[in-house]
Length: 383
Ligand code: MTE
Ligand code: MO
Image 1 (cartoon, rainbow, N blue to C red):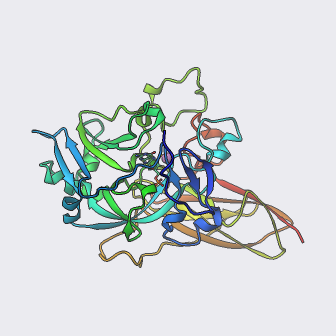
Image 2 (cartoon, rainbow, N blue to C red):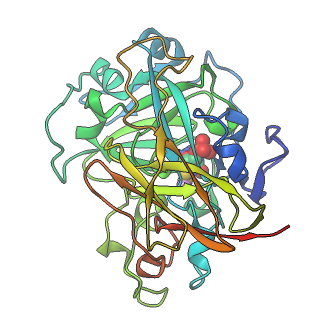
Image 3 (cartoon, rainbow, N blue to C red):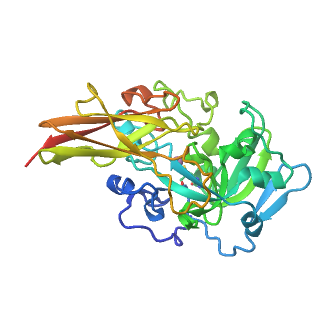
């Protein structure tokens, strides 16, 4: 594959794989702003970054309608009502490196910054589908039923040189409240090539893998997409499953993200000065549930204090007051006096009362996804 046309990237990114390009920002940079700057936003690719240079001719084909396939051009998408949705996108592989320390897992190694919080601007998928005669839906999502498949123009080795693809239930795609976007802007500016220029899907509250970049076609299909990343990847297995006994068909593709949080003002091991220490990080959950609280411990989880939380509602790029932040992370902060040495822990609770597992061992899985265990770092007072 051809990596001669990759875009420029910020020098402070930690590059976990070069080709395809996979990188995340340093922990401290990640939490320095509520809205993650585009150049610091993690980049997760499975092939070279496509080049789309003729925006007038670029179009997305829509198939599976009654009647012939249709094309939709950017000028048609720009005409639809524009929404700005603040949503955190998180890779299912976030925090994989820590999981692989228990027992080797397969996949790109990631620290705790494989996520970002952006303001995505674009048309609602529900509006686009309505243009093509598919009615909106606002009931509860039935299981089974039709899916909406998103196919990219990139090329990945996992698909034998074919494009990346994924799908979501039709009931979610046509539900305006699910806020699924065809996004052409990120943080108020035209989408960058790394993040899917000219058009990407953003599925809020769902693992990043379903937010297909560089959209080429949208297909209404009878059941979920049969592509590699839906069927042979991004599924969560129990700790007992290994590469000899794995049966991919026994699990469903992961969709919603569970509750997650991590400390970003400290590395895994730190030497600090005597006195007060500030513990800062992010907490986020899936399904639009929102974060209820964040607990911090400086004694390995014996005693806890509640962190303060901060979720900004006055984001510059947002014009409409109706926009909510239910898909967005919260940043948290706590201060404490550190004894000679300490294990600092953070864990979040979402509004449904979901909690994080205490140890990574109990959720170890061979693909190393969804490490949402309590985040632990070590601090020692030095000179
Ligand atoms: N879409 C395409 N076409 N190709 C990809 O490799 N990676 C997916 C998703 N969409 C991917 C894609 C994964 S696994 C994640 S986590 C997110 O994009 C990452 O989005 P970002 O690079 O904008 O942060
Ligand atoms: Mo991902």
